[in-house]
Length: 96
Image 1 (cartoon, one colour):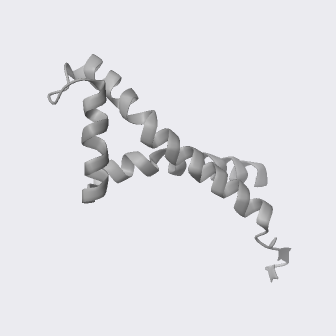
Image 2 (cartoon, rainbow, N blue to C red):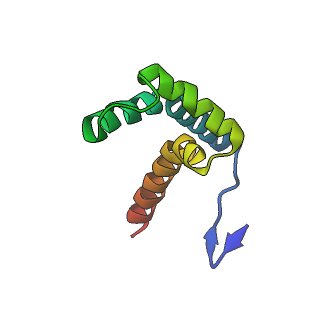
Image 3 (cartoon, rainbow, N blue to C red):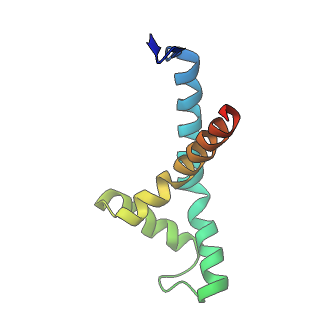
């Protein structure tokens, strides 16, 4: 397939595998490590967490995900979106 004289590479299984691994790793990081990081930073900047300690934020986070809270879903997909944006920017800079 060609677009304006350039060949567009087909999406192959290696690319899909790499993206799936990146997405899975980002989601695991966001589900397990990011809420405690948010708790530590929030405690340092804002004071104690109103609902309890570090484990309480995990207890609040997963029900928020299941209820469809936009903030919880942004926290979940934020690392993947950030990595994808950085990779896209790096790709764009290489093309210049």
